[in-house]
Image (cartoon, rainbow over all chains, first blue to last red):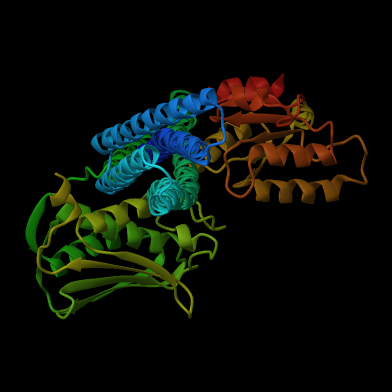
Length: 475
Length: 139
């Protein structure tokens, strides 16, 4: 899930970056081509104007030259006519050129993309009109001058007008040049603005890319950590499973051995009784003892599986705990064939809700264990009512061999046998495991320790008032 | 009388039994003693080795060929030392010691696993008839 989300995030961000870059590049290209096109079109519009001005300048000069030629005289009739002709044809060309220029300026005005360009063309139009006016004045003056004989004043006027036209043409040309440059500058400035925007977009994209890289890096690190921890968890779980498997195998091999071992002596009793080597009573007693052992083992194994699967059913009843303890010890005392004393030190009696048979089983197991490992001595069963923690503490302590240190940590495990030299009544190693399970199902705790002065002490607690127990939670 | 004594001398074999089940031990002892064997009992692997070594110490100088016991009957599953371990240690000391394995343990798998019980060890799988055991010992 985590990986899926991350890859989605990454691909989304990469997509956005590619899209943004694409848009920026497209926009940039479009802007560039637009600008160059505008520059070209503007130059294309201004250039004819300059050409026309050039034409006007040339023909005006030609006109002036012819005018002076005529005025100077001393030329043949033929030349005079030709000069006059040239004067007037130049005049016509100048006029038409001016009209052409005005028209061009008008077209430029109409097609101007912006207002400022439009006003530029308007200005150009006005300049051409000025030139036209001056030229008309020049024309009429020149005509008058040509019609009359030498008139110094008029000639002077013509020369002045002539210079005025020249100046106007030059200034117009200069202005157009300037305007051309201005509009190119304006476009370039405009473009520079857009370039800034483009650079801004690119920087934003770059920042996104860098933060994405950082994000991915961080994510990778997190994923790596997650994988590592998951691997560890798996290894742990795997080890636990292997341990459980080993425990199960041990359980099966020990249980099957325990089940098999009474079979040989049962056959032996039968054979010896048949051949008359032992008497019938001995054989029957032996077989009965072995059958009981098998029954106990079967019950224990069943209980173990119940505890393992949390299915231990308790049959609760309210009863007096001291009574239960005394009943149990009385029974054990009758079967006692050792120099061992069982002493009860009981606190005030209290009524507790518990499973009689199960609690008796725990007591029997603990006291029998003590008897097993005590040759001479006493076994003390003590109770203590703890009102504060709402618990009854039951202690079984003996003066026997104690628990070997290597076994103590696992004493409540499955198939833990005590390995004492004196052990001759081999238990099946399930007793304490069952005790722990039964006490836990009642909501209590069981512990074991060695006494300083020798012997072992087992202690378990039972809740005085009923609480939620493992049993009532699961069944 | 003479016949009986002669018979006794001829037949009295020393047997070392290692077995942790009290009932089984008493039954072995009963049938073996009835058949005229001298029985030594050990209740675990460690005790078995100790008794073997002790007897070995006593008989060592009598003859190099003579083993301390004619037969060692071993259970496999015993406290402290398993039958397999005991068998190995005994055979280290006396390679021609006769050993009979009597166990309810899955003997086939025990035999198949390499390097566990030496080949010279005989096997009696539990449960077996006590008479079968006698025949095996006498074989």
